[in-house]
Length: 442
Image (tube, helix red, strand yellow):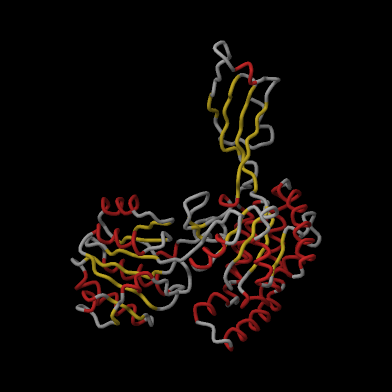
């Protein structure tokens, strides 16, 4: 996009955001439903664009994980539209009162949620992610600048065209949405710290670091998903096999897919042949340490394999002698994304939930549950491994900031200053059922 066109688009976006952030929830929800209907209406055009992207990516020799993320078929469309409709049913995140405090008689303070503003999103070649991001930004009243992977260019264009058609007759229009298409656009976006309030890059650690090092805009990082599962000595082994297989093969190209399996030595001789057989049936290559190879026939694992996000039908497996060794391995080799324990020992499970420092920590279930839709968030803009602002699947709450509202009756700070000054009440008030409208009545 030419510089002048980009500047003009961003200017229109910023103007549109003011209207979006103060619009009634009913207007935003109705537009979300129209967008979902429109995507279904335009299915043929979307699939044609996606087939062209897939053909070109295949000819370019792109790897299977990218091709799986890139594919946008009937199943993806169905799940995507259901996600948009689920977002429309969620509570309005704007102007929710999170704190109420009576500083003094007639001096009421409230903290309310408010949109971040303008969000820049750089994401992989995954068309369904574009729709998730757009739906969450529309619902939360944020403007969005999108840059998807170049491999999905035609599909992304078709998706945005469909969304714009659905917005054409709405009071909100579609100026709050801008699609970028080139690397040059991204470099220019990184320098727009006066116009963009938050950047959300999705990709490798190296890519996220690049973004952080080349911008002054705050960055919410979504990096590698080196997810581990620990099979404890007190595990139900049939459950462990089922959860490990689902975590690995249900969608191996996802960031919440299982990459490392840790097995307690007490159950390794029985469990490893069971899980190896199940993984082999599903085409999974196991890379095992020396103790794993004593129980099953597999490829030798190198140390680097336990630092690797395979995003494919490959699994690193290690035998450990204790719970503590498993947790230490996760702390050293993991990416703080999603880690799980399989055990019937409640005390051990509770320790794991407390002690593992990851965005999502699970007990007796698949790591693939780490997802905004499955969490009931409607969708997600990504899974944050950061600790500041938002962590885990980032839904509506992660796209909100806040502001303080203070209503008085002529009070001055001088009245509360000095040895004879008035004392603050600082009386906490309930926020249950309170919305911004009419909230100053007390």
